[in-house]
Image 1 (cartoon, rainbow, N blue to C red):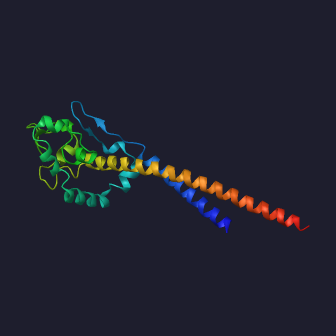
Image 2 (cartoon, rainbow, N blue to C red):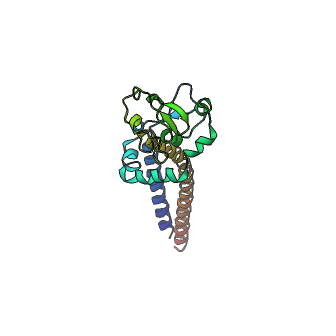
Length: 200
């Protein structure tokens, strides 16, 4: 039975190794950009792997994310935390709050409150679709912006880093268990061989 045990452990180690490598590859790219004079970072969708873009925040899945954003009132909570532009700009926003609850800084919108921004009279300062996608409707905001998807991926990347660290620990543990099991199996075979030789 020990060989079955060894086979199962080997498959677990192989599966854990493949998943860990995959998670590292797909989350290795993408990081927030520091905004001058602001306490928060901003995120761009193009900085993240195509796999995450196509399988996590694609059209089919994005509706579920938007529904969750609306249900949690994540953006509405910012309104009570910052009353002046200075207070808001100093806040250390989460990636999701930065990407989904306000227009990107480069659009040049003027702060009225945390979830209400006024566009320049001459139009957005950057030819980016996110600047036009932004809406002051509280159930819309920047939920359809590329920056919102990037914020979700940035938050997911942080969570996957924690999972990656746990996987490495589990991988090392399983490797040690496998080595101990292999040694025990080899020892049992050796004892049986000695016992067999003893009869002759």
